[in-house]
Image (cartoon, rainbow, N blue to C red; front, side):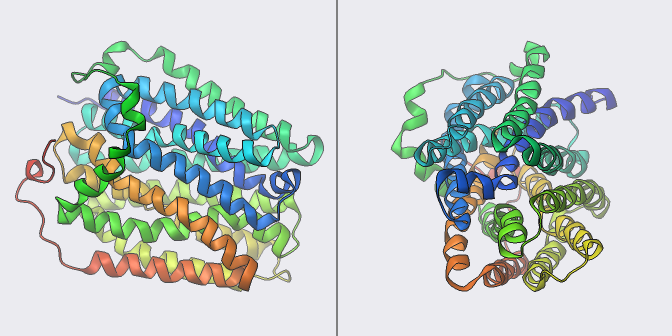
Length: 410
């Protein structure tokens, strides 16, 4: 029997580390122009840092089967914070090679929040509330972006990018320390398998997500659709501040504030749309609408120029945030509804692999597009991919007769 207090406690435990690690993850694009200047790289080269973080996340999602089921969801989150902190310390050196390695580690740590947090919610909350609760948990990502945008833009001008990044790092450390107070029973809700460090590095891990989604047409469809969503979101998050500051000549403080507004709008959007999905009885309906809205927002960004007023820019940032960064919790709720509760961690890790694979390859590709034909072309390309996500969701797919038939165990 689930209680409101139990559901709320589960949400808080899943939410806190997501806020902290998202603040760290999204703090990098806020400081991107100065990071690249310090490393002696062109501004668009930040796409490689963003791609390296995506690579780290992809690495975790292929190895999740060796971590969350072995360590438990709470311990996995604690390990994620430690790895992300180590990666950030490398980024603070300002050395290009160290930055790339640090970004991989930061991405690995950040990725722990999705399967571990999803497992906590699936174990301790009622299924009929998942649309709202998963969206509320995922609202921690843009909330972290709000903190990163506000904190980074306030500190960076007066004290430089290193102190700004150190302040952002302190947020992640604080939320990680809070996990030490979670009761042990939360980590032992399910039987755990033996932990083997070598399995995290096993080459065979790469094939696991592909094998998982191929066994389920419904999971394959949602994974393909979310690759389109991730392309437009990844492009916008990686390059918005650089676009505004370097491409259009706006002050870095204003660019950081607009980034924060975009993320704040996303917080509101995730809550509102999660509630709407529960009322409609299906996250998929909302996702179809968001595909069109995301494409429109990416196209809108392509039209921005240096003559636009501050009020117009803030309006655009709010619209973009509500459109391109509110799909995440909805797709996780959809995935969780397709599998048995015991398999939520593996299913979310497997499908999120494709999301972060997109996050890995999109920024470097878009960086090349920007250097070749400009920022506008990059955003228009992202708009096309968002429309493709909508088309995929419109296609009929045969769902399994029961959630237990969706994924077979190895």
